Image (cartoon, rainbow, N blue to C red; front, side, top):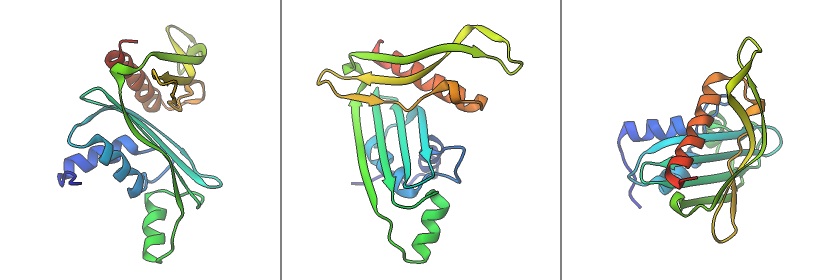
Length: 179
Protein backbone atom coordinates (compact mmCIF):
# COMPACT_ATOMS: atom_id res chain seq x y z
CA UNK A 1 0.00 0.00 0.00
CA UNK A 2 1.50 3.31 -1.06
CA UNK A 3 1.37 6.26 1.32
CA UNK A 4 2.26 9.88 0.65
CA UNK A 5 5.91 10.87 0.61
CA UNK A 6 5.01 14.52 1.19
CA UNK A 7 6.69 16.05 4.24
CA UNK A 8 3.52 18.09 4.82
CA UNK A 9 1.38 14.94 4.96
CA UNK A 10 3.63 13.31 7.57
CA UNK A 11 3.87 16.54 9.56
CA UNK A 12 0.04 16.57 9.74
CA UNK A 13 -0.05 12.91 10.80
CA UNK A 14 2.50 13.73 13.51
CA UNK A 15 0.48 16.72 14.73
CA UNK A 16 -2.79 14.78 14.85
CA UNK A 17 -1.27 11.80 16.69
CA UNK A 18 0.74 13.89 19.17
CA UNK A 19 0.04 14.05 22.88
CA UNK A 20 1.49 16.93 24.88
CA UNK A 21 2.89 14.64 27.59
CA UNK A 22 5.17 12.88 25.10
CA UNK A 23 7.94 13.70 22.66
CA UNK A 24 5.66 12.51 19.88
CA UNK A 25 3.73 9.40 19.00
CA UNK A 26 5.66 6.29 17.96
CA UNK A 27 6.13 5.85 14.23
CA UNK A 28 4.08 2.64 14.44
CA UNK A 29 1.07 4.65 15.68
CA UNK A 30 1.55 7.21 12.91
CA UNK A 31 1.74 4.43 10.28
CA UNK A 32 -1.52 2.85 11.51
CA UNK A 33 -3.30 6.21 11.32
CA UNK A 34 -1.80 7.06 7.91
CA UNK A 35 -2.83 3.69 6.46
CA UNK A 36 -6.44 4.40 7.46
CA UNK A 37 -6.45 8.07 6.42
CA UNK A 38 -5.02 7.27 2.98
CA UNK A 39 -4.77 10.23 0.64
CA UNK A 40 -7.29 12.31 2.60
CA UNK A 41 -6.62 14.85 5.32
CA UNK A 42 -7.53 15.01 8.99
CA UNK A 43 -9.83 17.86 10.02
CA UNK A 44 -9.90 17.18 13.79
CA UNK A 45 -8.36 14.70 16.20
CA UNK A 46 -7.75 13.68 19.78
CA UNK A 47 -4.89 11.59 21.19
CA UNK A 48 -4.62 9.87 24.54
CA UNK A 49 -1.38 8.52 25.97
CA UNK A 50 -0.83 6.46 29.10
CA UNK A 51 2.86 6.18 29.88
CA UNK A 52 2.91 4.01 33.00
CA UNK A 53 2.88 0.23 32.90
CA UNK A 54 2.40 -0.83 29.35
CA UNK A 55 2.22 2.37 27.31
CA UNK A 56 -1.06 2.88 25.54
CA UNK A 57 -1.79 5.21 22.61
CA UNK A 58 -5.27 6.00 21.32
CA UNK A 59 -6.01 8.30 18.39
CA UNK A 60 -9.43 9.38 17.14
CA UNK A 61 -9.55 11.48 13.99
CA UNK A 62 -12.15 12.81 11.57
CA UNK A 63 -11.17 12.96 7.90
CA UNK A 64 -12.25 15.46 5.27
CA UNK A 65 -14.41 12.78 3.62
CA UNK A 66 -16.39 12.10 6.82
CA UNK A 67 -14.70 9.03 8.27
CA UNK A 68 -13.84 8.34 11.90
CA UNK A 69 -10.37 6.87 12.30
CA UNK A 70 -9.81 5.02 15.57
CA UNK A 71 -6.48 3.49 16.57
CA UNK A 72 -5.62 1.96 19.95
CA UNK A 73 -2.23 0.38 20.48
CA UNK A 74 -0.45 -0.97 23.55
CA UNK A 75 3.32 -1.36 23.95
CA UNK A 76 4.94 -3.54 26.63
CA UNK A 77 7.32 -0.70 27.59
CA UNK A 78 6.60 2.19 29.95
CA UNK A 79 6.90 5.74 28.58
CA UNK A 80 6.93 4.51 24.98
CA UNK A 81 6.88 7.44 22.58
CA UNK A 82 8.76 8.44 19.41
CA UNK A 83 12.04 8.97 21.31
CA UNK A 84 11.83 5.65 23.18
CA UNK A 85 10.95 3.89 19.92
CA UNK A 86 14.07 5.31 18.23
CA UNK A 87 16.32 4.41 21.19
CA UNK A 88 15.08 0.84 21.39
CA UNK A 89 15.40 0.48 17.61
CA UNK A 90 19.05 1.62 17.75
CA UNK A 91 19.67 -0.90 20.54
CA UNK A 92 17.92 -3.56 18.45
CA UNK A 93 15.46 -4.29 21.27
CA UNK A 94 12.08 -5.69 20.37
CA UNK A 95 8.86 -4.21 21.72
CA UNK A 96 5.65 -6.20 21.84
CA UNK A 97 2.78 -4.28 20.28
CA UNK A 98 -0.90 -5.14 20.61
CA UNK A 99 -3.29 -3.38 18.26
CA UNK A 100 -6.61 -3.21 20.09
CA UNK A 101 -8.32 -1.34 17.26
CA UNK A 102 -7.39 0.17 13.92
CA UNK A 103 -10.54 1.05 12.03
CA UNK A 104 -12.22 3.59 9.80
CA UNK A 105 -15.99 4.07 10.00
CA UNK A 106 -18.28 6.37 8.03
CA UNK A 107 -19.60 9.02 10.40
CA UNK A 108 -22.81 9.21 8.39
CA UNK A 109 -23.58 5.71 9.74
CA UNK A 110 -23.28 6.70 13.43
CA UNK A 111 -26.57 6.38 15.31
CA UNK A 112 -25.74 8.16 18.56
CA UNK A 113 -23.28 10.41 20.32
CA UNK A 114 -23.43 10.17 24.11
CA UNK A 115 -21.89 12.00 27.03
CA UNK A 116 -21.56 10.08 30.29
CA UNK A 117 -21.02 13.30 32.19
CA UNK A 118 -21.65 17.01 31.70
CA UNK A 119 -20.39 19.63 34.16
CA UNK A 120 -19.93 23.38 34.45
CA UNK A 121 -16.83 24.71 32.67
CA UNK A 122 -14.79 27.35 34.46
CA UNK A 123 -12.53 29.95 32.87
CA UNK A 124 -8.91 30.56 33.86
CA UNK A 125 -10.08 32.92 36.63
CA UNK A 126 -12.27 30.12 38.04
CA UNK A 127 -15.50 31.82 36.98
CA UNK A 128 -18.30 29.59 35.63
CA UNK A 129 -18.91 29.84 31.91
CA UNK A 130 -22.46 30.50 30.79
CA UNK A 131 -22.05 29.10 27.30
CA UNK A 132 -19.66 26.15 27.70
CA UNK A 133 -19.69 22.84 29.55
CA UNK A 134 -17.17 20.05 30.07
CA UNK A 135 -18.14 16.61 28.80
CA UNK A 136 -16.72 13.22 29.71
CA UNK A 137 -17.13 9.57 28.75
CA UNK A 138 -17.85 10.62 25.15
CA UNK A 139 -18.97 7.68 22.99
CA UNK A 140 -20.12 7.13 19.44
CA UNK A 141 -22.41 4.18 18.60
CA UNK A 142 -22.95 2.51 15.23
CA UNK A 143 -25.88 0.42 13.88
CA UNK A 144 -24.13 -2.90 14.55
CA UNK A 145 -24.05 -2.02 18.27
CA UNK A 146 -20.35 -1.28 18.33
CA UNK A 147 -19.28 1.70 20.35
CA UNK A 148 -16.15 3.83 20.22
CA UNK A 149 -14.96 5.58 23.36
CA UNK A 150 -13.42 8.84 22.16
CA UNK A 151 -11.23 9.04 25.28
CA UNK A 152 -12.28 12.59 26.12
CA UNK A 153 -12.73 13.80 29.69
CA UNK A 154 -12.80 17.59 29.50
CA UNK A 155 -13.14 17.94 33.28
CA UNK A 156 -9.53 16.77 33.58
CA UNK A 157 -8.17 18.93 30.73
CA UNK A 158 -6.39 22.02 31.99
CA UNK A 159 -4.51 23.01 28.84
CA UNK A 160 -6.53 25.42 26.67
CA UNK A 161 -5.09 24.01 23.42
CA UNK A 162 -6.10 20.47 24.44
CA UNK A 163 -9.57 21.67 25.39
CA UNK A 164 -9.95 23.42 22.00
CA UNK A 165 -8.71 20.27 20.25
CA UNK A 166 -11.31 18.10 21.99
CA UNK A 167 -14.05 20.65 21.21
CA UNK A 168 -13.02 20.65 17.53
CA UNK A 169 -13.22 16.84 17.37
CA UNK A 170 -16.71 16.76 18.90
CA UNK A 171 -17.86 19.51 16.51
CA UNK A 172 -16.43 17.68 13.48
CA UNK A 173 -18.19 14.46 14.54
CA UNK A 174 -21.48 16.29 14.97
CA UNK A 175 -21.09 18.00 11.62
CA UNK A 176 -20.33 14.82 9.65
CA UNK A 177 -22.71 12.53 11.58
CA UNK A 178 -25.60 14.95 11.90
CA UNK A 179 -25.81 14.27 15.64
